[in-house]
Amino acid sequence: MKKLFFSIAALSLASLAFAQPKTAADVAKFATETIDLGKVKQGVPKPATFTVTNISKDPLIIEQANPTCGCTISDYTKEPIAPGKTGIITATYNAAGVSHFEKTLTVKFAGIDEIKSIKITGDVLSAEDYDKWALENPVKKVETVTPKEKVVAPVKTSKGSKNPKS
Image 1 (cartoon, one colour):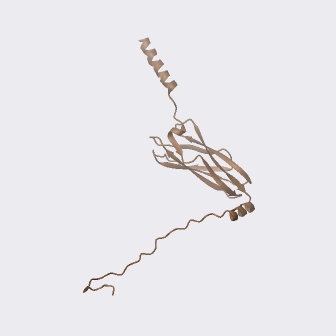
Image 2: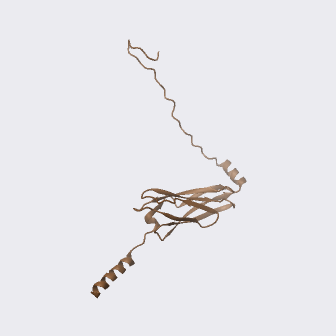
């Protein structure tokens, strides 16, 4: 009986020792892990939105999405994300100081010990420098194509019938 008990205990311990915990990559896929905000005007907060897809078979819960500094604020999907569906994490950078920036957010998913890091980067320019840059690099406007008005062709009538429009 002791041998059976020790065999079961040894098998259980071996199973636990070789069991691999789930990682963030097992449950979530980010559309991108780094968003480059490009040139940002000083004094104008700039948001970045990360899209995360639940690739597991269970609902995915974002427990935390925390910036690593006080110059960035974040918000995220609070309700569980169904399998195959997406949620968002929004990080807004306070563009106070003129310089290049690279800010990290740490994301914690429920039931996963691993912390996932995502980043936003860009360059903050003074208002004057940003305005010069914007003049030199105009944003291409996308023209909206609207359907032309429907053209109604005249009704052809056969000989002897009356055209209701005449």
